[in-house]
Every structure is written in C-alpha cells, then in structure tokens.
Amino acid sequence: MRSAPESWLTDMDGVLVHEERALPGAAEFLQRLAEKKRPFLVLTNNSIFTPRDLAARLLRSGLEVPEGAIWTSALATAAFLHDQLPGGSAYVIGEAGLTTALHEVGYTLTDTGPDFVVLGETRTYSFEAITKAIRLIGGGARFIATNPDVTGPSAEGPTPATGSVAALITKATGREPYFVGKPNPMMFRSALNRIEAHSENTFMVGDRMDTDVVAGIEAGLETILVLTGSTAVADIQKYPFRPSRVLDSIADAIELI
Image 1 (cartoon, rainbow, N blue to C red):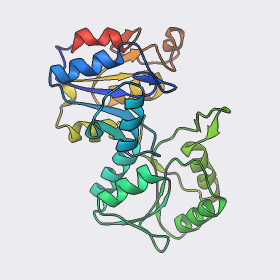
Image 2: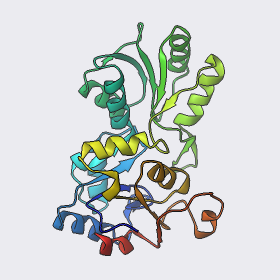
Image 3: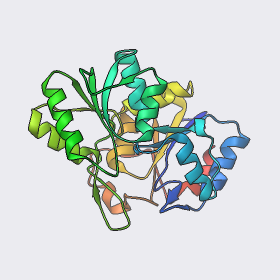
Image 4: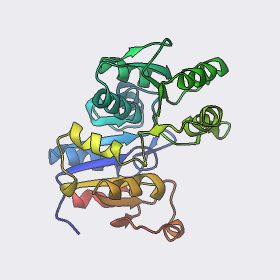
C-alpha cells in the first residue's frame, strides 16, 4: 500500500451519485478534498453533456463540483485528437459535450473529407448520420469513439449506446474504432495531465471492475472499488485482477485523504 495520496480521480455514477441522488459520504468526501486542497477530477464516460451541464446536475444532487474538476470521455477524446493532429477536422455523431470539446481544441466539424469520424453518445442516433459515417470511413477517415459502453440507462430501460453503434459501423466498414474512454487507461493519463498529477501518488475510486479498476491498474494508480454501484463483492472473484482496496462506499475513503 502507498502513502496518503496527493491527488484523486473518482468515477461519478455509482460512486458519488445514483439516479440523481448523492450517495452517502459523497458530499463529505468532496468537502475533505477541498479542505486538504487535494487536486481531483470527477470522471465519466458520458460524452453527451459539457462539464457545466454535469456540474449543474451534481449541484441538484447536493454536490458542489467545479466545472474544471469534471473530466468526460468527450474532453479526453478532444485532447487525444489535438495531440494526434492539431487543428484537424472531424465528422461528429454526438451532442454538445463532444462538439464543444472539439471546438475548444481548435477542430473543424465537417462532413466533407474529415480527418476523423468521431462517434459519441447521443439520445437520438440518426440512420442518415450513421450512413454518412460509414461512407466517410470507407473514404479514408479514421474512426474514433468516445467510449465502448454498449448500453445506457433510461427510465424505460437500457438504450443502445456508443459501443453498439460502433459495432454496427465496424460491421459495415471492416474498421474498428479507437476507443478513448474507460477502460482505456488513456483517459486516466489525460486526466492526470489535466491536474498535473503523477500516477504513483494518485488514487482512483470506481464502482466497476471492468472499467474503473482495470484502467486504473493499467495507468499505474492505486485503485479503490466501492460497492455502491455496478460491482458486488461476489463479482470480484470473476476477474484475474484485484483493486488495491474494496470499500463499502465513498464515505470509507474520507479517512484516506
């Protein structure tokens, strides 16, 4: 086990909130981070919303998180593309979270000869837009996707998400996308760069073994699995890797700050 961390990364849904309600200990955890002046980021694979949108959502749940402390798969994707090809162009299937992030790094959004096709989350996938993406990829555009999640939640039940639509495009083009979001440790490394933190003294808190924990391990972080989200204690044994710690909730992590 490492010494007390200097920086923190934490997942949002299943760790801080559940169905628009703050989870026990979340407010106190964030308050302790602020008191100790610990750099931190709240991470999410959701690419629909901007950090401002998500900060407002958290505030409605009673959690005060600055916009600058939220890191989405859209922001990570924009940072990745800026590093790969500064000032490039992209055809985007997604919403404001993704288009805003790309604009802010200087990308041009176009459906004519783009360098990249970028697939993100949207609540209204268009067959016309997917067809356009397939043709552009066939014409040479490189294929990027914000995250591999195959379904998303809704009041009526699961809905198709980025991973499912990416599979459709891959089937039609024979081209696999590069997924930037979790479980790709790229998202954690870009988050560390954002807050000028180092992996050896940063903790990652998540609720999923197959995304948060594995990506944290691969990024060289100490990992904490909390049992308030997707993964139950019995599920841990199914995986060939282990988190550094297993805690009942984020409340139990407060004493580690």
